[in-house]
Image 1: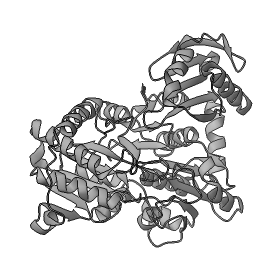
Image 2: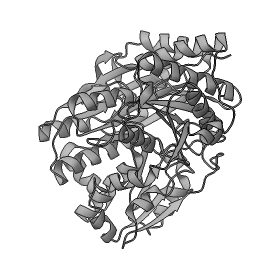
Image 3: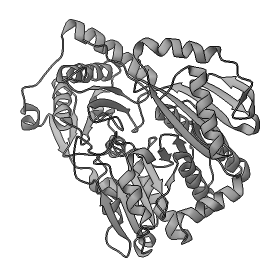
Length: 476
């Protein structure tokens, strides 16, 4: 059996290779034993699933193992996005949540995300213990199981529908009446994922109209490399927007916790620009104040906004388990990461792509201005910031050699800017004159080297990414 390892956000594997029913049972048994050991079992577990191949069956399998260990289990009545599962964990006071999803990975993958009490992502301490338990359970073959359908027949597994309550809670964060009355033409791409229909349903009837692409379930994610809301996966979406018939484009990923934005002309707004726009909306338009948490891979526009509005900015490693933990510790106003994951105070300490979209619509309804003008206003305040990322697939046998080359690199200049410092907070970061940066980091969920850069000009971004490839000795 392939060892079960949790990455940045969950355990993921290729379906029918290392992601099998046997291994899902082992992980579920490990989660049950973790909760039993720590005296948390009585509060129960919520289990949910996305639109991927066999996700419903994998979820039912996990629920049956948890119930066989005498844990109260609530299994969602249908497909749900991950933030809805986190919401259900928090609202029901459950000890944990188990989400069957591989998030934004390609179609052949599936996975398990663990949520802890309050709805946040499991910490490294939790997942490390679950990994150790899983290894022992696999070796000793001690998985407990219920006969199929017995859990639901006896009531050991309860079916729940938290969708209406979740949508009602989201509406409370925005002026939903103003959004309905704004007469916006909104294009949504749910990428065949678990958030399909939720933005439209949250808005409801009014002058604002929503058209949705890829709303129906299709586990193959046809036409997409992966259900990740980035420009390279949103060709049809951006093409439709370019016709000029919509005011804004909103996209969510496979499990609905990531968010992508495009303007009225069909131009993709990068995740870093989107985070800065959301921060500016909260600080300037809504007049809110509070700490802001950002990952190492996201924009320094946040730092400039923090300075201007007197709000502290906290930098953490990649992964919402770190951002969520810092959100709770500081009662942060919002948190964001480069992947398009944004979290908000008084909701859940996790990403929510649906709520991110509603906040953006609230921004447009309040200002009556298009996204392109809002971005220009932001740039007038903090200066232009340009960003891009390269994902390079690595063989397992070359990973350490690449790591060694990057660790030994001592460049004096990158993209024409002097290197002022280096650090290894999360990967290998080169901070350049003016606060610009280049980062090389190994993905925690896929066999990838990610190279990120934020620069004052688009051509410098590409020069920096090329420099990163040269430092690592790799190419696309």
